[in-house]
Length: 243
Image (tube, one colour):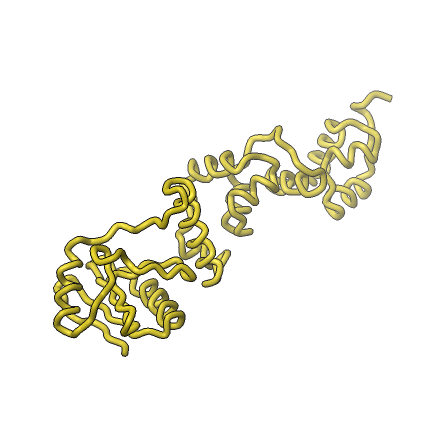
């Protein structure tokens, strides 16, 4: 009997392909016939799945595959509906993260940072460890183990100095011994009076757009140092003082 005339019982095919979610190649092996034969019977019986469904089943059931081109509908589903990142999608589909990213980029599909944070929230402790790890990598790679120092706003120095003289503070800052580094948190502060245990931060205009971030940082510093906290704006005006 030729391959073209092989008959596959409709109920058997329905059970294996639709109910058990087996791939065409798995069904062909079990029924000892060609993939082409199974495919033709599926079309004949109206059991064919869409490409995305078939691709997912193939990956789940048979492991890693690199031979197929990425299906945009499949990528959309995994990225937007299943909320997998490009690395996880690459693992699932057996391809590189770059290939997934390139496909997403062509489709114009991106998530905002806030959306990513909702999908995979990062704890305060994880953020702290990442920050410290990043600083350590810079120190080892570029400064041979010496402490790295941040950029600072030169305009802030006379304002910090003036405030210190007026209210009797001696702030350690970028041009007076270097900005104080809180190594446990991975933060530098604009000014710190060690004797009075008071931190001073100089807020440029852009800080208005990151108040939540600044408040969280401020809370961490106060909790860690048990310190007072002062915030000045670009005009040297006191916008916050916590004793």
